[in-house]
Length: 311
Ligand SMILES: [Zn+2]
Image (cartoon, rainbow, N blue to C red; front, side, top):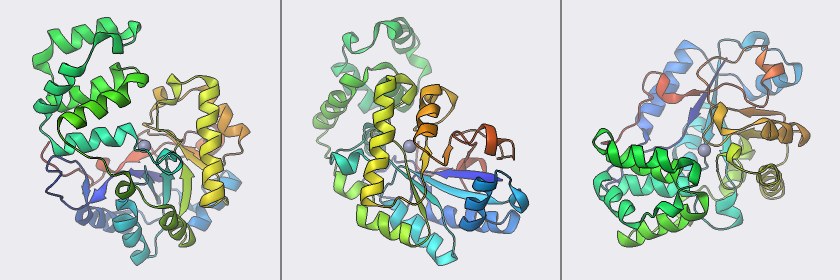
């Protein structure tokens, strides 16, 4: 079986000329392709195979998953699924709801969508101080950011500095400062699917799962912080959206992004299944040994799945 991951699905917006997203037209074409080529696993089949720990007759089918609860998941993805009688699993980071606060990962996407990479990088470098980089990364940072400067395209370097090099404690303020410098406002209420609409999506046959509270690289957090991220996000969803099926998805994905503490916490929290990002089919064995990190493809690995956008 193939689980497929989606992020932004929308139309071109002239206010975000460099934004990368899957155009809704291509999403529809990709669904047509999956339908013709593989067929979709139904929710009943999926829940049954999770219980039985055997794929049964669903080996060749496709399961759709959507990460980060951006408003386009309601406006475009959900509407299209509904029209076709399909369902999906939507993974929600709960910080925007619990704290009315944007996730930094999305603020970085928006800045990169709105401004030229060279401009972003120039401002970031002006604001950046080496004390914001942890000791263990400082040598790598100097080598990569200064000496090999010409090898880096601006946008990837901008993202890499904020996502990889800068300590989490400084990141938020740095992004604030870059945005202020550019007069850019983040509107949290417009960016994410409101709770009422998450409930509507759930009522219409979709599953809503946890994607932590604050969408950080879990393997970088203490055991205690990881437990809070998992437990509190499920508590929020259980109280405010739904509590029928407990499912989770690792922020960023990949085996570096979580560790044994993450997996142990998911198991002890009775999470039924979780998704990672790994380019291969789900097989019977995964339902036993990899149930908290099931493999999942990026949509761009299939026809019509490439992101639009100028960069
Ligand atoms: Zn995510």
